[in-house]
Image 1 (cartoon, one colour):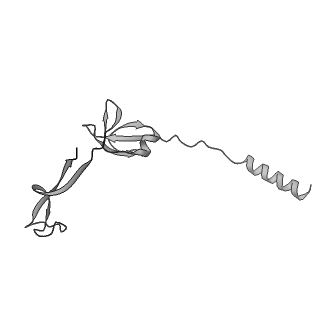
Image 2 (tube, helix red, strand yellow):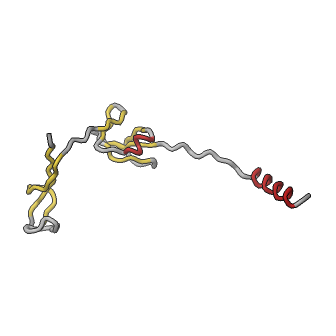
Image 3 (cartoon, rainbow, N blue to C red):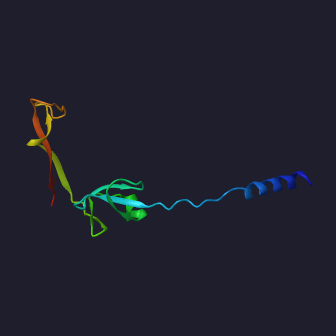
Amino acid sequence: MDNNQATTDNFLRAMGSVKVTTPALTVYKCYYDANGKVTAYSINELEGQYIEISAAEYIAAKQPARVVAGKLIIEELKPAVEKLVPSDTGTMCHKKDVCVVVKKDGVYWRKQSNEIN
């Protein structure tokens, strides 16, 4: 037996000992709350209600979306302007600098969204 034949035989023997396994099927999930609002997209097992979605829907992972009657509904994004406005609730910031969050003696701010027609 020459060297090339021995190499070929060793290769074929090694390939014959390789165990081929089929990868587990990936299940794409869209988790949602009691109101149908999407809370997460995952391929892992999380707590909560979910529906199985397609790979394309998972890749898009669009929000805002909701689940209605077991189906993922992608909501149309409407152009909007968001700004901070003083409020009775929200995040308390320094009176002279909205970038500094404080725990007392500040002003509460919240985000307000206005749709553009």
